[in-house]
Image (cartoon, rainbow over all chains, first blue to last red; front, side, top):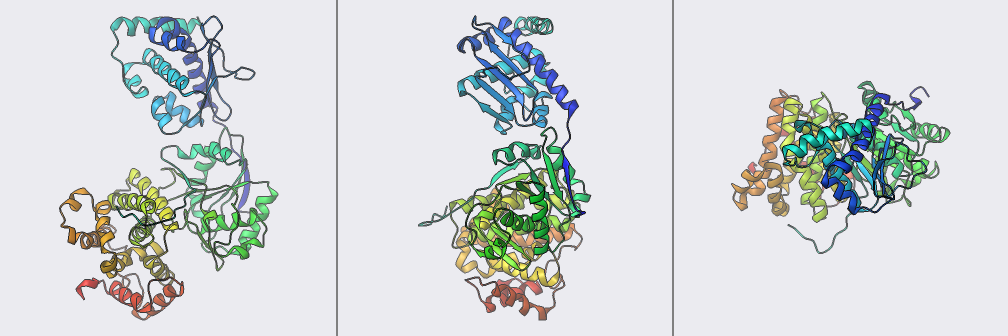
Length: 176
Length: 391
């Protein structure tokens, strides 16, 4: 029948690449923030040793995995969830929703409220990780962008914000 | 709020509405255990590039899609059989209907046959004759519709179906899909939503659940229709598409009513969109029933006219004010479209001699609660454009 056809949906390689880079950097920034920022440190202290979370995009990635090792140190654990024990799995439903989040058109809280994420794990863990992500965004982004990405922009001291920002950028780039 | 002694309400429809809603389709289909959807639409929608927006939503999913874009304005059973072969030969397991009216009727009929046996289609025609749930069915509305899309009804090839199993599992309302330059289509769809929700809100089967859907639908139409026709307001279009979906759900849980049956018959005779005819008839039917249903019509004033008008109107005048508001809205749309949207059945091109045929066709639908004489009073007033209370 002329009016019938079968097609295989294509790909969005550029959007995927953008989100992959953002996830890679955010993952390393969380590792850095856990050493630099007292609130992030406290959030991770409340989580059990060996705790691992994955933030990724359905159906086929990209992903980032961050966890605490047995010594309690927070580590960026790469972009491959295969074979890892994941305690908290946060999946953005599609690449367009991820783009809305990672171009800061939609905050994490708004994305959750609009049901753009699927979460598999304990609610207190989710809340802790969303708070960590919010703090990370405040460090990484200039105020006029971060205000769009977080629910409420915090009133931090100059030292915490700017010195912390330099340290987190430095550590993220060098990966320690 | 009115609270009946007992009531029944059924709505299995998940609604996903708003910015980038289409992109949720792969995940939602996965939740319905569907891996290969069959998209049904018509040439007009395909020509506007709207199907590309749906297929674009599946990028990165690895999913293969079957697409049929040739649904004619009047589909028949032969088409359903051809589609069934395509569906089965290509291993599809779910249906996405993009469009309105004929497209959705075809999709619903196809779902009956692919979920069972081909001969089930004729055996399923009638009231509640579908005995088990059908396959996953998603509806993506565009700017024009008949009001049946989210409902439990379907009509195809002279067969009428009514079953809750025909309601879609998912409705995805995306602002990119509800764009249209055609004022007729926008007004028709909105008027069907208004008519169905007004009927649901005032009928004897009304209940708190139907009221909730009908109230929101009336409010969206009252707030947005004139703006959308005047300026094509994007947010307003999305609100109207939501109104149509909500009205369909209220309509599925209410009797069909006089406006629907008369409007449908008048549309068939005049060739105008059914919604335009329902829009013309709505205030006349409300006026005719004001003595029996006026109490509920009073409450309609709030959603369709807003707080200020509602608060500024005396209790005993609210029902009349609600009806007048609908008359005023029609005049406004008539003026914005420079007379393209008719105000009377006479302007719609129906001859006075044809009114009897319209009334007979409506009563022939077998509805309870009104007869030929009731219909003729309403039709004659709507033909002339003369308010019933002024005669």
